[in-house]
Amino acid sequence: MRLRWRLRLRLRAEAARTALGQMRHAAVRCTAALWLVLVGLAWLVPQAGQAADGPALGAFELTQDDEGVSLTYSLNFELSRSVEDALNKGVPLYFLAEAEVYRERWYWRDKRVAHATRLWRIAFQPLTSSYRVTLGGLNLSFNSQAEALNAMRRVARWKVAEIGQIEPGKHYVEFNFRLDTTLLPRPMQIGISGQPDWSLSVERTQRFN
Picture: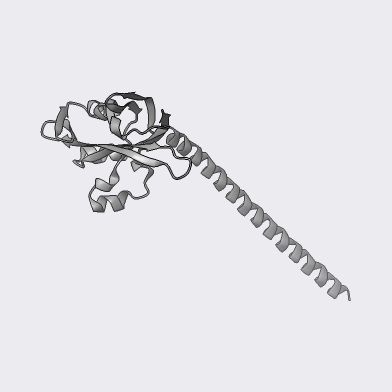
């Protein structure tokens, strides 16, 4: 009887030690998981800060006269390291500014009365270590990347609607400026798909009478 009693006590002690070991192991795993979550949150905070420092509009002004509606704006943005590396390795970049003018209608969806676009192409010239910016049939050369980007950062009195397109009533302009990756070589589009470094865009909506 004493032998059975001792054997039962030993089995119970071993079961208790096993349960305690499992509890310790589970606690270690929970601590490790919590540590990973905290590390992940610490990594996400800087990322959110970087996203907040993206392109921003400075001046944005609409003027209306006898010839139509003109837009003056300035942008604050820099190229990410990936985009800058691609440019300096001979990949041309395309930047698109788009302005759509709408007339408000209470009885139906708003009517688009005008649509204007500007497309810049910027390319690095390795032989002369210069940057060429093309806008329509206009070609300009700059000695530095900063000077080349300034040609796109500031636009004065860009006509976005003719006077005959403006109808009686309230109007507004939807403006968008972006790095147009759809004009890059197809294999490169696939390679950069989903990469935040290549997402450069800014939007603005403003009403006028």
